[in-house]
Length: 231
Figure 1 (cartoon, rainbow, N blue to C red):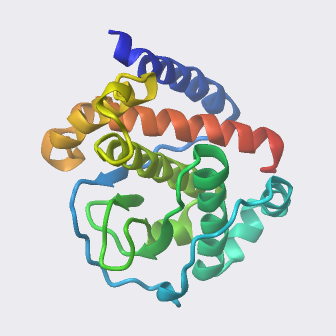
Figure 2 (cartoon, rainbow, N blue to C red):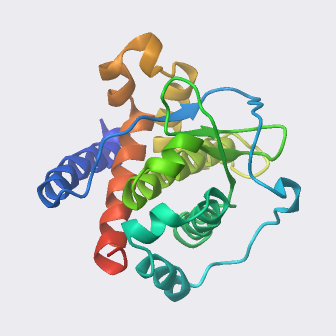
């Protein structure tokens, strides 16, 4: 049970935040996904995909000023590329400033199976990427789309943590019992037997550790954005 404490805590926190956000009407359920594949090839719409370079830490005040300038009306009028630029800014901030890992590239495309967003641990473009569904990007509210992005960023963190744990050059075997790597071990076990929404059912998909943790993180961070910047 000890190696599940932080995940249990996040699960409980998620339940609390769900209640709070439902009370304010600030949450809508959509389906996100972790893509458990080594390669995912899609026809990407976003421009200049090869020009991406790892950014430096993002200034929090700048990010909050960008978020504060967005309401649902202005969001609905932005182009897909402009929305992706904002989502990339958030992704960079979350990865580098908050989670302490390299960022990942954000794209949009038409996704299958009614998924709003997908994290791919490797693709033909970059070591990893997040793809937001094109229709969801156009039609989804600002808060729900950002919530989707944060969910996928957490999957990026989970897989990065697994990779670091399994890299003998970086982590000595005696260090793998550090609390954070206990979570990584849970993530890895779940990754091996990842349950898909369409094949394994809603309950199996939603209750697995990777998805519980990603939902909890997304809700926690959205609550912070909501109180700090989002109108």
